[in-house]
Image (cartoon, rainbow, N blue to C red; front, side, top):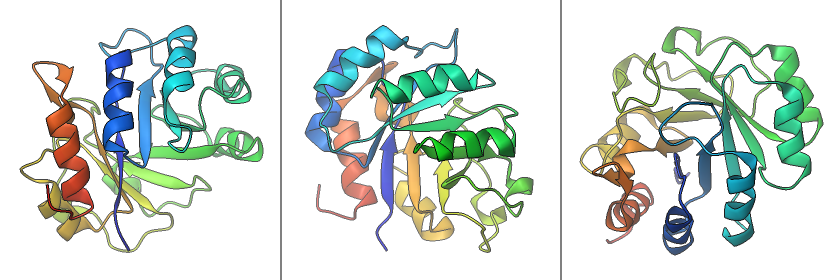
Length: 198
């Protein structure tokens, strides 16, 4: 089964143009306040309007209200939610019942816990810092499809896929050069994930 790819942390209209060029499986945007790559609903709507309609937009949240998340979903801005906080299993189910794709972010030690989320994402404890997790410590027995994040780059992504065999890889800082999304890196990451000739 081919590993899918999510390119996250997109916050400029140029980033959406790059996404439309390289065609990853998912595009991520950050709604957590006060992050360098954070966007608001107005910017997200503009991005969704020009994003290829076949690419789901995943919103990243951390302990934010279900009402806020559901409003973005019902407005057609996002198609899924990535939960980075202490969201409960009940909250996961609320989003799923609305029809959303739900990604629950957990520590490696929590990977065997049951969850009704569509995907379980494992990242470094302090996600978004571009630090890798110990790939060898990720258990092969899983209750849900796994997304691997944390410090993935063009140099290590194929090794990470080989060791972990994730359903999806999630890259943010690894698709940037000097803090900005880089079309060449994004293109390489998609090609390497799909094992295509670059």
